Length: 133
Image (cartoon, rainbow, N blue to C red; front, side):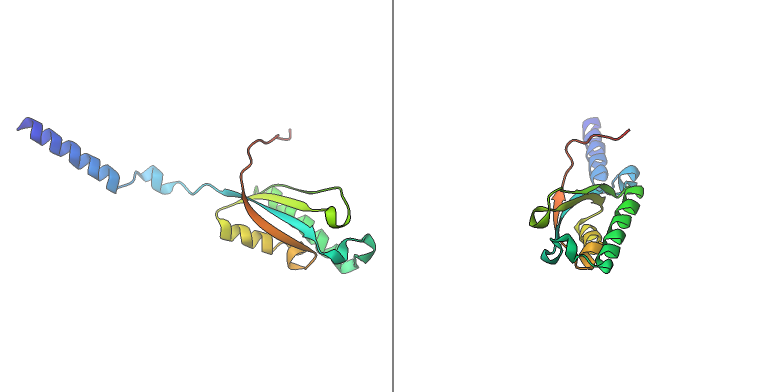
């Protein structure tokens, strides 16, 4: 009789543990996911002489937005190659909750929304990182 009661209590406790998550598990927010988007200039802007004053203003808004995203802890890094013309490209590596938020962040980039650059989104995972002092 004692053995049957003990088995019943253990089985019931096991079922309750599976059915009801621990409070700590419920309150932990999902860990942000990392994404990268690759930016390419539109062909019209391959030559420096083709940049209008409005293009330069849009590019400045693009840069300021990245600075704000760095301060907010959303942007991990951003940069571009030193090549010119069709060989140049930029990247932005950042963290958000999901792919929808990543796509929104990319599409709202002033350089993308303003037609200066095209962008391609990819899931990403930083494997190694050098921390700046």
